[in-house]
Amino acid sequence: MSGRPDNYLDRLPPEARRTGDHRQGEIELIPDMSADEAGTGSLEVGVVYEDAYVCIVRDRVRFPSGRSGYYIRIFETADLTGRAGAVVIPVRDRRILFRWGYRHATRGWELEVPRGMRKAEADTAAVAREELLQEMGLTARRIDLLGSVLPNSGLLASVVDVFAAWVEGVAQPPAPEESEALGRFEELEWEEVLRRIASGELRDGLSISALMLFQARGCLAEGGAG
Image (cartoon, rainbow, N blue to C red):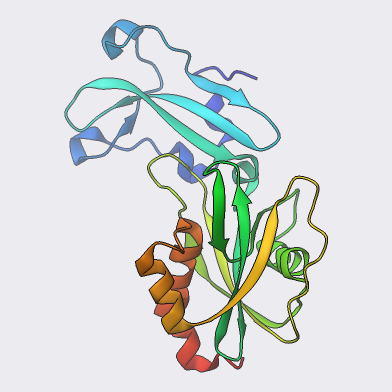
C-alpha cells in the first residue's frame, strides 16, 4: 500500500509528523518538493512498503546543510496506534533472568530478556506479562514501568516501554510459538550481566538499553526482592 505525499503523514503518530526546521540544525520534513530539487532522481514518497509487521516510509527532507533529499523511516505496525511493544526484565533474588534465542536477522543465538510487539489495543503492561509467561513460564507478583527506550533511533521510529518484573518460581521452558527458536535460560548476578555485556556475549541493544534504565532507576538498590 503506497501513500501519497499529501496524506501519508496523517497515518503516523503526532510526534512522527513534526516538521522540524533545518535552520535549527534539524532534518526538516518537506511535504512538497520536486525530484529535481532533491537532486536524487524521482523516488516514491510516502508508505513504500507495508505488511502485518512493519510500515516503511520515505520522506522528502531538507538537511541542516540546506541540501534536499530523501530519508527512510521504519515503523512497526503497532507504532501507528501507540507504543511498539514492551521489554521486561525478570528479577528473582537480585538476579536477572535471560533466555537465548536464535535471531534470523543476525543468523545467530542472542542472549536477551523477554520482549514483544503490542497487538491491537493491548497495553504494554499486558504485553510484558504475556511475554514473561510465553518465553519463561513465569508470572510477576509485581511489575513496574521504568520508562521507554528507542531500539535504533537512526532507522526505527519505534518506542518500546521497559518494565521490571519481580518473579518467583523456576523458569519453565513453555512450548515456543511456531515462528520462534528459543534456547536455554540463564540467571545472572548483576556483576555477571555487566561482564557479559563487556565481553560481547550479551549484545542485544534492546536488552542492554533496558538493563541500563533498570540500573539508572535504582531497581537493584530498591530491593531486587521486590
